[in-house]
Length: 159
Image 1: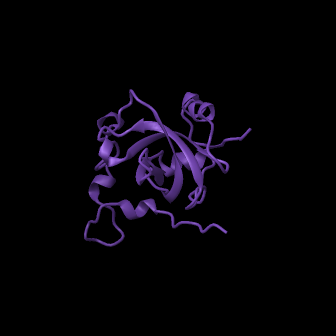
Image 2: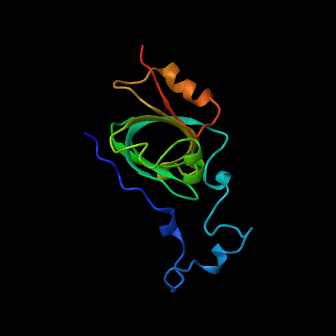
């Protein structure tokens, strides 16, 4: 039986103001830039896409981005934990994805834009699919990147 992971509550990400129950003033200004937010192209190489095959370590469901931590074996057999940035929780919710949609140990295949710093193990997610047991075929992996970017979780079939 799989355990469900705790879900990150977006409200806990608000900057501290020193006044309990009151958000920072910059959070109240409509149209103000989000503190700490970034352009995707600053951190990720939007000219490249890569496919990762691994297991979910954690799913942090929140705003401005949800994040997956995924354990992925590299070419030398070492397991690296990738930080995979996904869409905001409110946008995922509208597409039917909930905070318990992915659990620790779920086998997934991811397609996305790699981070500009290869040693940071970061990915901006375009598509994610559940992988049935066993390795996915190369054509199936490539098809995940050929799809239009989607907030949904696809299911891959095996032959």
